[in-house]
Each structure stands twice: as C-alpha cells, then as structure tokens.
Image 1 (tube, rainbow, N blue to C red):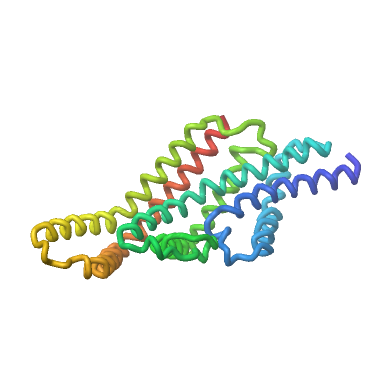
Image 2: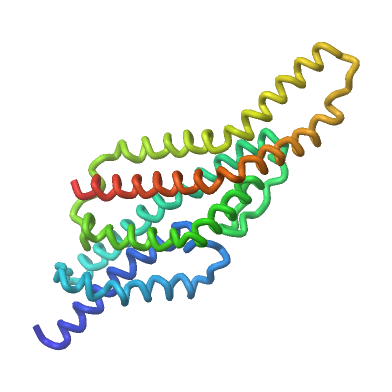
Length: 259
C-alpha cells in the first residue's frame, strides 16, 4: 500500500467514525441540548473519534476505495448514529409525555413553554422534569454510560453494516412502551387530580348552589404542586429505572441489528 493509499484509508476511516458519533450527538439527551453550540458538539464528536480511532483501526475494517460506495457507507453510518440517538432520545419523549398529561390535568395546557434544552414548545411540567432529569444524569456521570454504550455499538454493528435491524416489531413495541411509561410516570399526580375532579363533581351535584368552579382551578394547581413536592424523594429512583430501561432498549437494538 502506497503512502497516498494509506493516508486515504485513514482519513476515510476517521470520517466514518465521525459520522456515526455526529448522528448520535444530534439526537441524544444532554449532547443535543439547544444551549450546546454546534461547534462544541462537532468538537465533542471529533474528540471522541480521535480517542476511538486506534481501537477501530486495529480491527482493520474494510473500506470502499471508490467514491459512490464510500458515500453509501457514510450515509449508512450516519443512519446508524441517528437510530442509536433516537433510541436514547426516547427517555426525553417519556418525560415530555408524562408532563403533557400532568399539564392537562392541572390546567397548564394553554401555557406550554419553550423547552430550553431542545428549543421546541413543550409542556411546562415536562420541561421541568427534563431539566431535573438532565441535572441528575450529569450529577451521577450517567452520560459516561451513554458514551460507553455508543462505543459498544461497534461490537454489534461494524462499520459499513450489511443489513438493517432484523426485528421491525421492536420499534412498534418501543412506541407502545414509551406511552406506557409516560402514563406510569404521570399517574401519581394525574391520578390524584382525577380523583379530586370526581370529588368536585359529586360535591357540585350534591350542592348545586355552591359555585365550586370559581375556586377549583387554583386549588387544583396548588394540590398538583403539593403532590409533585411529595413525590420528589422518589424521582431519582424513577429516573434511574428509566435510564436502565433505555439502556436495555439500546442493547435490544444492537442484538437485533446483529441478527
């Protein structure tokens, strides 16, 4: 192999590793936050690529030398990173779904705020839960596990994968589990407020002269915040279980892709 061919092979390998990491960082929580500048995200992907490059190069992967096949491999590597980032992003989707249910029950539906993490409109309680969960993940160095899980992807999904994930039913089950976990996460506050609505309805039917609707909305907001405050001691354990579930989904993705 000539010096030019060796240089071309090394640059091609570096770009392939970079594209997978860039695809993941575009969607994954913490890394894809709106407050993180694009150059910082690109620099993070490039820095991890430099660290990981000797390990991948030691496996001597096969890289096409022609332009069109190489472009196809770059596209596939980008899609691999995006799929992995999407699986990791489901954790944020669960928190947003739970916040949407809580906002609906507390009367905050019309007051959706701009999410400072992703820069899109999101429920107020979902926004609060996302920020709190992000701080917990960073405080416990859980983002290191995200990087380690991404590194592990090369053991299951090599460069230039020859197939797509074998089990397409996995994605349908994943969406169903996201909805189920959102409901479970919101149920303490949502259920308590629903029971209070039933009690108010019975009270209104019993005493029609009582103008309960003039005070029920601020009372529901205060009651919702009280339940939220009481549930905060259990929030850390919920985030840990949610993170472990997310990592198990990622492992299922790797195993299905390998098949």
